[in-house]
Length: 172
Image (cartoon, rainbow, N blue to C red):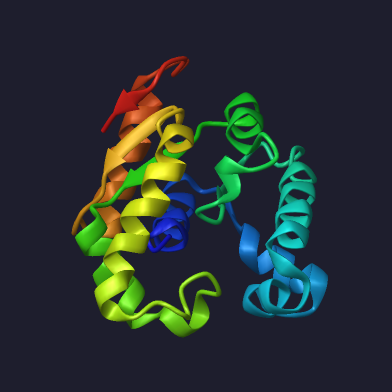
């Protein structure tokens, strides 16, 4: 949810010389329509089903950086599957920073289109309270407020390189 997953994912993939995959873009290509249209026409339940199936179809990509949607870890046992198959990273961004970012791109976010500025922050806080138990299960937890993607990518790469197993959560 506007934490910078795709931007940072591209930076990290370049830095680590790995393939970058944006899960939402892959779904859009597969469905031949936008995520916004999928939500509008077929609903969130349908989207979560194809999101999970698409994610699990990527299990053979061992040298890839995958940017997921903000809800991906929270549905269909997503966080457990991702932790089993890779190194998960939670970009922890404050609600006020998220509100600013989301205000700029609300029309591209199907779950946010109906929220006015005065209710958007409440919605973000509510969504984070629902999702954070899943996010906190990530192997890396990165404080990502207003830090440039190249610096975050470097910090994540260094942490991954320095940690041989990352069995428990690690703060960056």
